[in-house]
Image 1 (spheres, protein in one colour):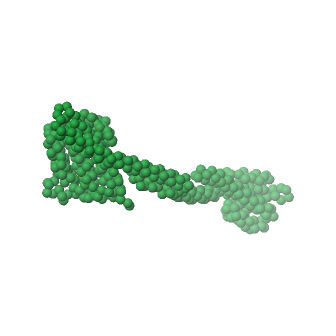
Image 2 (spheres, helix red, strand yellow; image 1 turned 45 degrees about the vertical axis):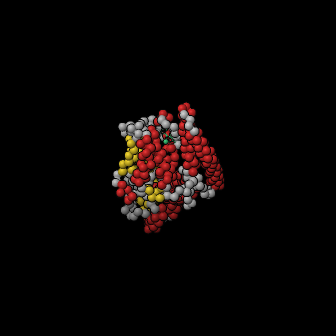
Image 3 (tube, rainbow, N blue to C red; image 1 turned 90 degrees about the vertical axis):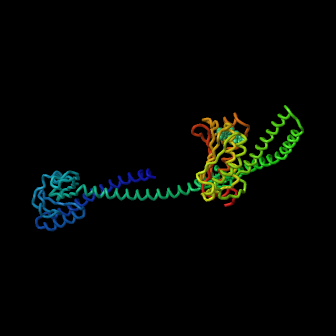
Length: 458
Ligand SMILES: Nc1ncnc2c1ncn2[C@@H]1O[C@H](COP(=O)(O)OP(=O)(O)OP(=O)(O)O)[C@@H](O)[C@H]1O
Ligand SMILES: [Mg+2]
């Protein structure tokens, strides 16, 4: 738009400037001719006053100075006053040319005025011979000022048009961008796992069709994910019964008094069944994530950690590990401290996965410390810690890290489930290196947050 205004405005300003210039010139010429024609009969001394009045009228009409000289170049009338009457202007080049019978229009610098002037001189003819001359002088700067005023006016109009154009452009751009921005926000919600988000159908035809396609895609995604979850949940559920049956049969076989290699095989079989049952249970938890109607409550992480210590104490002792709980506050004050908002069973489950890992991957005779703060619980061990490249990978489903592969059997789902559960309530689980060797697992949950559960309708 700026280019258009420049492309149209500049030639217009130039041509207007040229027109103003030529108009001033032709007006001066016209007045000079008029005065010369009238003055032919007024050159005699008897008509001096009339001649003077004629010069003054013409001077004010061209906004310049008009003089009338006789054949010898002596000033007979002057619109600027009587000061120069009687002095000779014969030496002025344009007067000399006019007295020689020529019409002249020149731009020259005036020594008397010290500025550029436009001088127009014409002869006063009587009976074909010049008997005098009329000269009109105008200040060029006045002409320039008139031209600049015109150009400035044009420039201002251009600026107003530009401002209006920009304002209209901004309004149109905002109207086009708004539906796209809304669609982007919905896409971000879907990417964040909220498959109930739908884009509003609005904007241009293309934008509406884009929003419709987006919603269709999200519908399909939600259906597919739902079907997948349902399948995993059903399969896990179906597997539970035969697994329980299998365990009972193996236990019965173990009770029949077998010994030696057969007993060892049966024990190993029982261990495998337990592992399989754990996988099935974990898959069930995963398939229900984000869909359960878990009631939330205010939970003190200090009490949560203290309870976890009680749950895991015996198992730790069996493995020869000292399990301890450090809290910044005494047991009696724990209940009055700030709480987090979550389903208690989810927080328990997430913390259990971290303690389970610490106990599993710690060397015998080691110490595992659970320390609680108002919004986070740390589980510290002196096990092998993490390899440099596995900090992120250990949170992937079924990924077993270095410690996992070289340690007791596991499924590689514990950390993933713990993190998903914590994130359900606006928190997180992280696993890092401990200074001096070992790992620090952290469960953090926001204090006092009362987040709507995803399954609740808005
Ligand atoms: N405290 C820890 N010290 C060292 N490595 C750890 C620790 N906790 C987890 N890891 C690593 O992270 C991996 C993933 O842990 P995660 O709990 O998800 O699975 P897992 O323990 O292998 O199996 P399970 O699902 O039965 O718990 C582990 O295999 C292990 O290599
Ligand atoms: Mg684990």
